[in-house]
Length: 225
Image 1 (cartoon, rainbow, N blue to C red):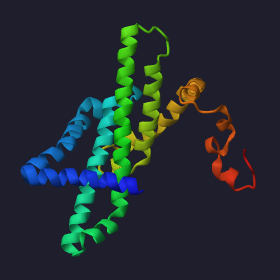
Image 2 (tube, rainbow, N blue to C red):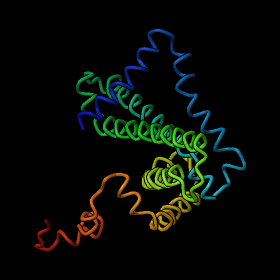
Image 3 (cartoon, rainbow, N blue to C red):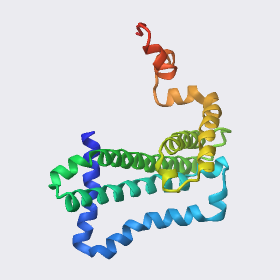
Image 4 (tube, one colour):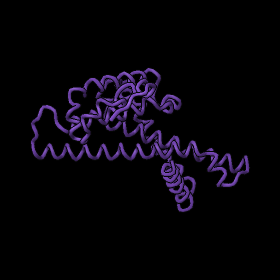
């Protein structure tokens, strides 16, 4: 939690530094750029109406979604701190404590956006490597990484109410995303051993409550090695 708050402070400091150096208009324009970019992408008739897996699992959709969510929470934190300090006359320390829920969430969202960015970069490097080596495997490493990225990214999007609340994703499209998460789980199931080997996950973990009904398992007095 402390690390998430530090990440949130870093994001706030970048806003404050730009306000001091370049003024309100420039900073507001830069902060609004991500919203404008994602807005233009999502209001495009093709991307907006597409429920296809290949569109929803694309790098562009996933990165835009993660960037937009971070932007929303950063603006929410700025607004809340200003309200607490200007309207409620709280000190900066007390205001920060009062806004802890937003700052922690922002830090988490920031870390997930960074992970998504690095995930995308790793896939691009792997695709370049496969092009150079003329890899002809029917199921390439980049294909498997893309499926894993889509499962992780869409799982996060499907569980976060921000996207529907701020009308970034329609209710109907969110239902489609939730269905796609289940479809992706089925799609990658034949390759589970490849993933386990790649991430050095021991097979024994498949027999633990972690991958099953852990609530039911922990409701009983059962010991696991």
